[in-house]
Length: 497
Image (tube, rainbow, N blue to C red; front, side):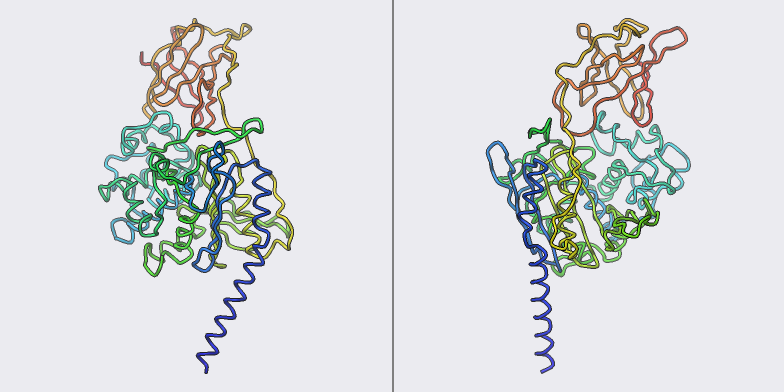
């Protein structure tokens, strides 16, 4: 009799929970479509996980705007920096296998690795890379403008790349740090990061539509093209194909596949009764390991505070609830993954809109509904939406006659090099100067004296603002000897030819 009553109790609780969730999600489709239209978004896909089950998944809008092909729960999108938690999990698995310790120095696994300061060499550990407290910060220009043939080759540049923060005592988001973590995994396994992610994570989690390559992504029947807005008009943009930076940005996935990824984290590293990642590492990864902003609330009704970071995840207090999350952006896509460990639910929103917080807005709206805090009112939000970057077809390259260059244009031509980055070429075509990197070509527009700025000459993947200042240096004899590029606080490239 007691057993029957116990089973009935479980059944009643399950029915009540189901009814509560159903009530919380009432009218969800309408609200999502309203927000999507407000953003002039093309398409998105959503999955909600509760108590180890995907309870809701649906596609909205179009994956192919021109041909009006609809988004489905299986449509594959680029997830950008949400890739970092996958690389974190990979490192955790290597720790579980006793192949490494988080307290090890990266140089133990990457031969010849040396940072630019003795302090970094003595302090920085694998754990620091996971938490973004290595001091490296943003040195993305080194691989974006000067990609290496192999990811591991980039490590040779580290002695010449200055730190952006104090190691251990500052938090500086670093894509390069995760690039290093991917390299460590490759060195330990003698396999590519792509193969390791597929073998150790995507396959065991049955993420069958997911991959680590845009070339693989577009072979599938159900994938999304990338889009953005320009002067309030929807435009298709170019795919960005991560290469050196794959461990921080390369995964492409669907809402249903990402639902399985969320299940892994909500179930303490296990999936369908199989341990994929140790409970200890999973718990540490979603803990507030490094405080980003620990200032107390300034108002009694402040809803968001105590921002921190774990291993590949951000954490914060969200309307009184512990939230674990990450966002991702890659040319033409943005994504948001939210976890609420105490309440045992998670959300993923994948979107094909660039320069936008569309995915975050919808994920926040669903979170409030799932927490029962919407009070049957529409979610209030402020849009963050910016134009994509396009070439200026009418760019003026005429010289500023009031503040003319100190030399003829030919004097600025030549090869310029920096050991932390690489070599670019400045050449003259007609009356214009062009700067050619291994991956991009810009036109130089004169501003004043020996100061020029770079402008796009052709469409490029939406990656970073291409406008940089180039201030040429003169030697004691008055000859052009180098140029200061305003990257990483100012970097000198010496003229070598």
